Image 1 (cartoon, rainbow, N blue to C red):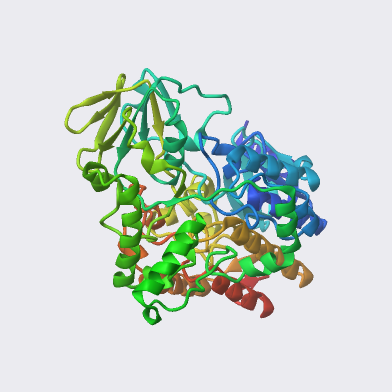
Image 2: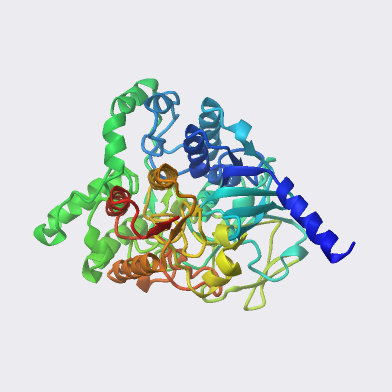
Length: 549
């Protein structure tokens, strides 16, 4: 075939590619709602999902003990009172299987699955400047085009898989928590190693402790924890929550973190030590994230307040560990303040370490060096022989799900290459240089952290949809954040973050868990209510900073 024939064939293939008004990547909380909103507009839209079913986070994370830590009454969709009332959670913090069933219930109620292509991974999306459309390719080589591309890829959906040399050499069973198999995993009586003590690792450890033969937990960074209070919900309970639907819908959109609780205790400086302790005790006993996100905001910016709140939590943890110095030294944080890292809710996690068949291994001073056929080898040369290795290593948060797709914008620019130098967005909704590409749960929006995700994802979907409606109403085909607007948002984001203690710590909030990742706070910390007001203001003024043509 000569060059002219080849070009002709390529042009023919491109013209034969199916075209959509919009393509949505992902069928989790955001993707389902985005598909619903765009279909309401009469647009030709299709969603693509790597998994075999809906759910996103709640499809992939089926490891032992997986459950969310936002209360069921506010981890909800708010566009339909009837939909809210049609599903009754069994408890305050439902486990993964129930949450996956709920999202399937939503998809079925809205008849969304007919417009979702499952078991399909998007590998590339290149912007065609001549045609003003996106050319999208799947892993099996199928091509399609779309005017608008909305990435609902998830904030914690790019699990860290390859951390240690020699993982493939292990003769036993090795599991990644974020890619847990659907088939049952039998751990009864086995020697198990768990690597990672973040929110996921904690859920795994406390859940499998009663059945394993022995367990070694490799602890690098200890976590402040709050014991979860998880009562069962009756039909009457849910009817009461349902009667508050409109109140809750309004409330979650205005609070600091998108929950129904907020920092209402009053200024720290105006309270006596006894009054402060009363607030902390009350919120501790609530058994939710309220101690973190509804006690005293000064803990995020004032080192003295941070230390006082941290002392309170440390004392609670020390009592539960029966004042065993070896465990307290290893499991209670000393080098960072409460709330500057993700705060896990747990259920008798600390008590696990009091079991005679559980050993906490300090891998902060003696790190894991490699995986060997028999188990894990640490830097002192010791081989920890086990039957099963569970890696709860976390995620390339916020950016990882997007950089694993080959996004190419104007002039062939690569999102992966740009973000390997500096992670930038325009409010987490667009990236300059990538016209008609919208994102939810992306860096520099309230996402991945400090936000009840159903609150924030829905707000972002609604803003994106309203922006598309505005553009179409005014005869515009292309929407792109300007460089000036993006620069201003990045500056505002960084200035807001710099006022807090969070940026002084190393955690996945700052990208510290991924080698070579540019250091920047992944999530906007100015508050969900504040962010939403800024988004509303932009929309009311005709989207200044988002060029349309």
